[in-house]
Image (cartoon, rainbow, N blue to C red; front, side, top):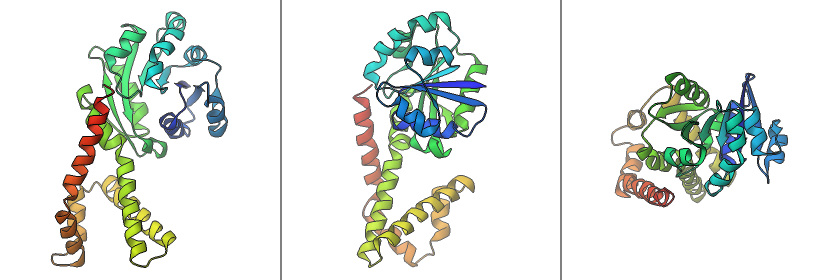
Length: 263
């Protein structure tokens, strides 16, 4: 039985807990001074009374508290680190580098930087991973395997995390915005609001399944739907005239710029 402990119980932590909840070989514990007990009760997990209690029971500890609390949490865990140095630290703290994590916990602590998105709750997530260059390959593989259970994952250089955060981390909000725009267009065309919402949602879900399950790249799928000179092609031309690619690029760049403020 593998025990994964969470320090912090916000939206991302909850999504990860939900993603791993169905695995009978994983036991999850959580500590958060404000919401830990409530989240544990909601998801059927075990609440702990302190970060040190989480460390003492865990094989891997997920840091999911506000980044500003890193130094305080690391200080609280020093005794646990001395008593049980084999625990792996997996950080989901935005903008906190491996170097900063080692400065807080010590060079000898095994640390991974992880960047999941909320879709991990459904096992359709994406997680970027960054490791120390000298981390044992078996440990890397074990961490990657855990996150693969939540969807797709890649090991990437830390300098790419800002872009990954903008595309995969913030991306669900942007896709949701497109679905909402389709819903509103349907309403304007005379479709009842609840029906328009179902149309948009099912279209987004089905399209994602084509790309994910059937491995179709976006442009291949788009051209399969379009008939030259047909109605879809007319709509596609309107998107091009409205510079959809440029608008999305602007959204990603704005997100990356904001991300950079936290690095």
